[in-house]
Structures are given as structure tokens and as C-alpha cells.
Length: 80
View 1 (spheres, rainbow, N blue to C red):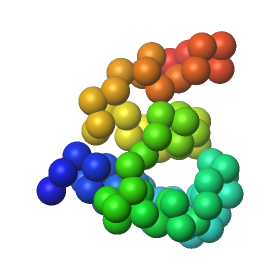
View 2: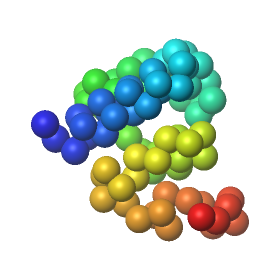
View 3: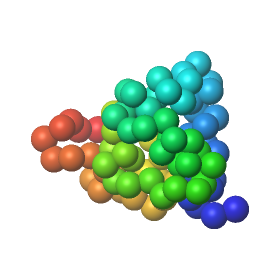
View 4: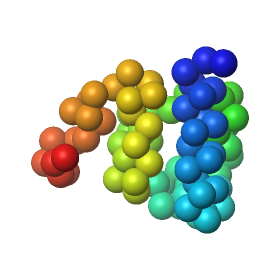
């Protein structure tokens, strides 16, 4: 399983554990439900913008993809 696939599977588990539908999480982070579905299935790559939006909603997946927090958190948006 690639890092992209394992990250997507982890995102799905986290989303389901939080009780959110794909539609609800996609709306929270500002992406389409089909894009989120593709990310969760490993068919679509996750961009830094989406990764950052997920981080701010409590889904910290950056480490799975080899990113440091400073790579994901936009300057001035917040601190750890």
C-alpha cells in the first residue's frame, strides 16, 4: 500500500469515527465530495491546500505524507 493509499484509508477511518459523511467533511474543507472520495480511496493525490484545510478541521495527516507542520500550516493562520 502506498503512502497515498494509507493516508486516504486513515482519513476515511478518522472521518467515520467523527461521524461525518463524505459530503459534510468535503463541505467543511471546501472540496467536492468526489475529490474526497478519490483521496480516501487512494485514486487522487492530496494537495497541500487540502491537507492544510483538513489539519484545521482536526485531521492531521501531514506526517503520513512526510510533511512537517510548517509545510502544512500557512504562515499567520495559527501555531502548534
